[in-house]
Amino acid sequence: MKTLFLLLGLSLAPLSSACAQTIHFLTEEYAPFNYTKAGAITGIAVDQMKLVTERAGIDHTLEIMPWARAFSLAEKQPMHCVFTAGYNRDRATRFVWIKPLLKDQMVMLKRQDAVYDNLTIVKARELKVGSQRGDFAVEALEQIGFHDIDLAADIDITLRKLLSGRIDLMPTSVKTYEKMRLDGVPVEKAMMLAGQVYGVACNKDTPADLIERMQAELDKLILSGEQDRIFAAYGLPPNPRTSQTRAHK
Image 1 (cartoon, one colour):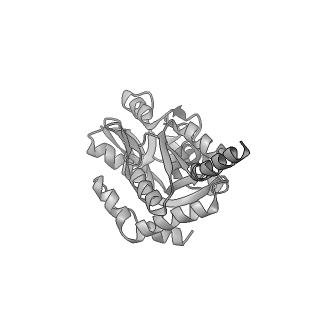
Image 2 (image 1 turned 180 degrees about the horizontal axis):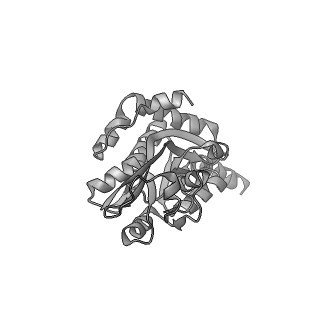
Image 3 (image 1 turned 30 degrees about the vertical axis):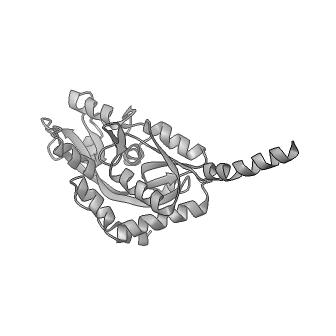
C-alpha cells in the first residue's frame, strides 16, 4: 500500500508543478486593448500577452471581470496578474511589472454636441466627471484636484453615462478615443491630459524567473516591430518607441 501511494505521489508531482506555474491573467472590457468579440477575449494587449506567454513557455488563464475586482485579486492572490494597468510611483511598489504594453496620452472626452470653450483643468473641475472604479485615471485626476468622480464598473457604463448626459466628461487614452471615433461613437476631445505607460501588474509573490521570461519576450516583441504590427492590425498608429521608454525607466 505504501508503494502504491508513493507511485501515485510521484505520478502527480509533475502535474502539481505545472499547475503551480500557471499565471492567471485578469483584465476588463476596455477596447481596443482588451475586450470580448464573438465570445473570445481579444485586443491589442491580449494579443501581445498571448505571444509573450507562448514564446516564454508559460501556461496561463485569462478572465474578464470588473476592473476593481481584477486589480484587487492581482494584488492579493499569488500567480495573478492584471492588465492593461497604468504604471505610476505608487503602483510600482505594490506589484511586479512587465511593461510597456503601450505608451499613450490621456484625453478628456465630451459629447459631440457639448460646448466647453477653452476648457482648462480648473474649469473641468467644475463639471461632472466619470470614470471606472479602481482605474488609473481616477488616481491621476484626484492628484490634480478632481473630487466626487462618478464611478462605474466598466468603461461601457461610463460612456453610456456620458452620452446620456449623466456626466459631462470622461478620461480615457487617446488610442481608446481613436477606436471610439472609428466605431462612430459621438464623442470629441475636450482637453488633453498627461501621458502614461501601461503594462502587466503581477502579484509581488510571482516567481522572478517568470517575470523575467515574460519581460524578455515583450522586449523582443517591441524591438522586432511586432508590437507596432499588432497596433496596425486594429487600425491604430504604432506606439511611440516603447523600448526606448523602458530603457530610460
